[in-house]
Length: 90
Image (cartoon, rainbow, N blue to C red; front, side, top):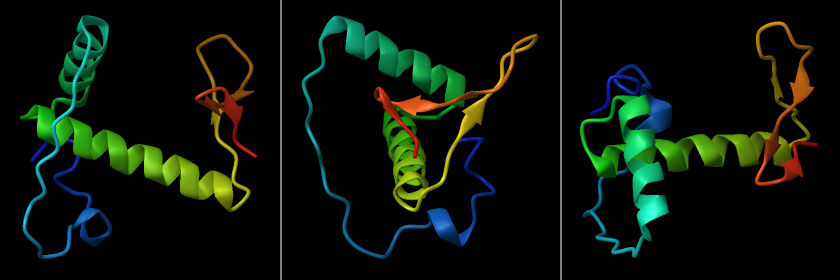
């Protein structure tokens, strides 16, 4: 379990079912990106990092589908609307 999801509670819990194995092919740049994400998330394993990233993406997309908006603000900048994969959150 990652340090960031230790307190996620029931919302992040998975149903009791057998794990499904997924095999993906990554080019060097994508593998490096995944490793950076794993380090940034302080994930114990690559599997944990991928699961956490999928949960986060699902959250962004589900909130966006319900009309929610996300904003990001860098130091010394005005807030701006966050885009996910080039698509503005509604």
